[in-house]
Each structure stands twice: as C-alpha cells, then as structure tokens.
Amino acid sequence: MAERFGGKYSPGNGRPPEGGAPGSGNQSGPGPYQGARRTRAGGRVNLLFIAPLPLIWQAFTSSPVVMAQYLAALGLLLLAAWLTREGLLAQEAYEARKVARRPALPRKVLGSVLTGMGLAVAGQVGFGVIEAGVFAILGTVLHFAAFGADPMKNKGMEGVDEFQNDRVARAVDEGEKHLKAMSEAIARTGDRALMRRLEGFQTAARTLFRTVENDPRDLTAARKYLSVYLLGARDAAVKYADLALRGANPAARADYEALLDDLQQNFAARTQGFLTDDRSDLTVEIEVLRDRLAREGLRPTE
Image 1 (cartoon, helix red, strand yellow):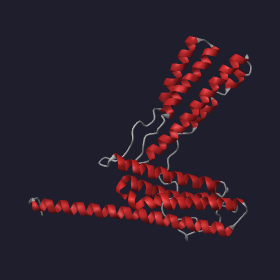
Image 2 (tube, helix red, strand yellow):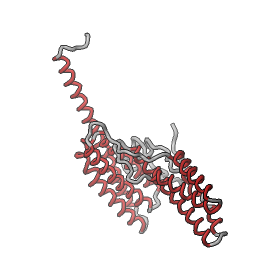
Image 3 (cartoon, helix red, strand yellow):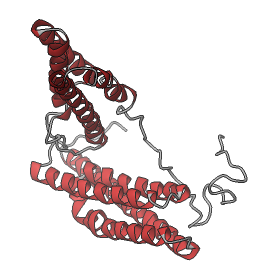
Image 4 (cartoon, helix red, strand yellow):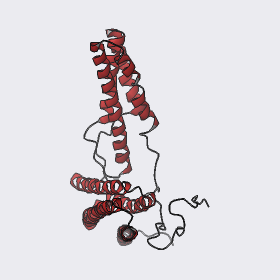
C-alpha cells in the first residue's frame, strides 16, 4: 500500500496514521480527493492568455491609432480567455452535481465570439478586411471546436418537480459558497496541514450535498446542515484565521481542529442516516410489491 512521504520537516510529521484519534488530522474513510477529477481549466486555457501577448510589442512599435487597435484586440482576446476559463469551471461544477441549473451566462460561447472579434481587429490592422473576416471565422470556429458549448438546460431528477429541484440547487449553491469561504479563510493562515484537514470535512459535506441531490425529499431534514451549520463553520473559520494571523495559538488551532472533527462526524452520520432511510424505503416498496403479486396469484416457482 502506498504511503505518504514524510520527513523531519514535512507538515504534520509525527501525526498518527490513518484512522488515528479524532483531532489528529487523519480521519478514516474517504480522503479529500475521493472522486476528484483533473480540471479542464488548465493548459489549453492558459495558452489563450499567452498567445495574444505579442500584440503588446506590435502596439508599442506602431502609431497611436494603430496602437489603440492592437490594444483593443489584446483586450478582447484576454477577455475571451478569462470567459473561457470561467465557463469551464462552471461546467465542471454543473457536471459534478445531480441537480444543477444551467449557467446564467454562456461564457464559453461568448469566449468564442470574442476570440473571433479580437482576431478580426488584429487582422484588420495588420493585413486587411478580407483577412480580418477569415481570422474572425477561423477563430470563432476553432475556439468552439476546442472548448464546446456551455450547458444549455437545467439538470435534475426525473419525477421530481422543477420547484423541488430549484430548492435543492439553491441550497447546494449556498452551501458551496460557505465551503469556499472556509477555504479562503484557512488559506490566509498558510497552514497546509489544516487545509488538508478542512478538505476532509468538505468531502463529507459534499457527500451530503450529493445525497440530497439524489433525493430532494431529504432537503427539509438536511437544510440546517446546508445553511445553519455551514454558516457557523464559515464564521468559525474566519475568526480562527483572524486570530492565527496575529500569532501562533496552538490552543485555538486545537479547538478549531476538534470542531472540524465534530462537524465531519455529524455530516457523515446524517448522510448515513439518509442512506439507511432510503434502503428502508426500498425494502418497504419490495414487500408491498410482493404482497400485490401474491394477491394476484403470481408466485415464483418453488
């Protein structure tokens, strides 16, 4: 079995192994990277930010009017790259959920259009009208072929009304905002070991999110976990980060880590409770169906 490399100066050195006591920072069960996928907002998107940079040289070696046109093209291409990256991140969040609303703004499509516009402006300045049109068409088509379209419809479960799906989607969105705020707060402390511990809790929270998305009827019972508890966890993270930035405080860190342990255990227990209820519901449905078949005189051959 693979083991984490650790040395004298490694973060968390000397901590108990997996499955150790609560508060050790190593909890048994799935790790923070369970189900993780490599993000698509990486290499190709980064190239979109780099490719138009030579226009800076063209701009500052030209007349003022031409310089303004080159800078406009540069701005359009960089805006297109940013929209494309944001569109890919939105699509990944959409695909990771069972219930999700389509992005309000089709960022990748706008990125394709702006790429074509930026290339058209650069082509007009450097070559001519015909070349500008060719660049615009090629840029738009190739960008769309490389990155595709944004999700264009809401995603939910069949047999569940749209109102229920919207309620779940809004609750999960709010929960994700709280988790993001927690990550930003702890990241300010520069404590990588505590960040990993936080990721363990976030995995448990997102498992609960997915469970509620699978059966929106669980939302009522889970609402306090997705709102009240996560709001309190966010506030605790912000307050701890503010305190940690003033100076090392081992007692406060231990208290915050113990809070993460309690939260993770409670979220996992609530998720397990929903799964147990689902199995109970399935057993009841099976027994009811068997009784109906028996009344109809349909029995399996002994």
